[in-house]
Every structure is written in structure tokens, then in C-alpha cells.
Length: 280
Image 1 (cartoon, helix red, strand yellow):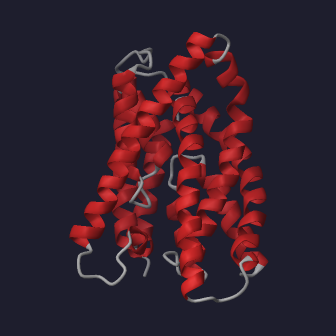
Image 2 (cartoon, rainbow, N blue to C red; image 1 turned 90 degrees about the vertical axis):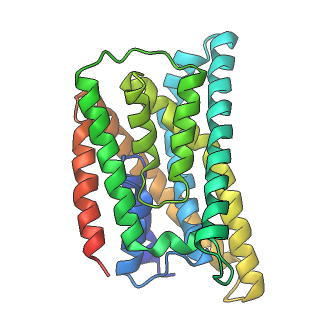
């Protein structure tokens, strides 16, 4: 893949991943516009490696807050880890359940049916973007009329994990937008909802990476199209670029959350969903 295309995708991913506007939708649209196949194993591998770059940006950005808020005592640290673990288990159950249902029921009869085959479906991405937009706007509306200071307990973790699981098979249904909005609807403060959402991303990303690495290696073994380094070098370059762009995006997101501008991300998702629907 030409370096220019890797740079474009990495910058798009880095900025969009950590904003609640669905980085996957933006990267897939960029891939389509550049004539690339978003559902190809090499492209889905590149996408998750770009996600990994932004995951490291999340760790760097939130580390001091996590230590201050959750790891000053072993009790608070263990409580936070338990909530992360609980939400991740729920996410895995919901996400894998949806994946199996899509592949075995809705894609029944398709050769080598994989949920990744849907990643290039712009109509489905458009619908998912619209759903994310409405969820963000609903959360912003509800927040105006409630005092969000609820703590993070098992019930809240289960709901956030459940919604995150719904996001996994559907590109366009922003993971961060959906989980932060769910936290706001559960009356968790925006700052805590943001911290928890991105902590979940750090835990989830390695599992997604391993799946896509396995899928890409399997496809490469079946139909070699170059050396193995050609699969991973673009992703490694993109990781570094998405890391830098992700740090900038996080500063923007935190600023907008603290200044009550959450609803504007919802309006953006709705507008972008219309644009994606019109693309071919």
C-alpha cells in the first residue's frame, strides 16, 4: 500500500477514533474513496493496528487520571478492575452472540460468511451512524434535566458493556459515543463515563487485534500476495501516526465534554450518516 494512503488513513483514524463519531466509518469511507476494499483481511488488519495506535494514546492521556481516581488504594483499584472485567465479559457475550447470529442466520448461504464482509456496506454504516447520533442527542437532552453524579457499580458496568457489545459488528455505531452516552443516561458524570469508556477500549483492543491478525495470516496463507512484512509494515507506520493524532483528539473531546458540547457530536453523526448514505 502506498505510504500516502497509510498516512491519510492513520490521520483519519487517529482523530476520529477518540471522538464519538465512529473512526471505523470514517476510515472505511476514506478507503472506498481511494479504491480500497474495507472488507479485505489486509485492510481490516490495518484498521485494528491503527486502533492499537490510538489505544496507546488513551493510555498515555488517561494514565495519571486512572492512577489518581482509581489506584491510590488497592480497594479502589480492585473495584475499578472488577467493573472493567464485568463490562468486558458482557461485551464479549453480546458481541460474539451477534457475530454468530449475523453469520449463521442473516448471511446463511454466503461463501465463507464473516461479519467483516459487512464492513464495506455504506448503507448499513449510515444507519449505524444515525443510531449513534440519536443516542448521543438523547444523552445530551437527558443530562440537561438530571444531576449526573451516580457512582459506577455492577449494574452500570453491565449496561455499558452490553451497549459496547452491540457496537462491535456494526461499523458506524461509535463505540465511545455509545458507551459514554450510556454512562450519561445512567447518571454517571461525563468525566467518569469518558474514563471508563476508554479503559474498556484498552482492554478490548488486544482481543480484536489478535482476531484480525489471525484472519489476515489465514488469508495470506491461502492466497499469498506478497511477503508477511507487507501485511504489517503499513500498520506499524500507521500506528505511530494514529497515536499522535489520537492525543490531539482526546484533548478536543475532553474540552467539549467539560463545556457541554456533547450534543454537537450527535448532530455531526446524523449529518455524516446522510453523506455516507448518498455515497456509492
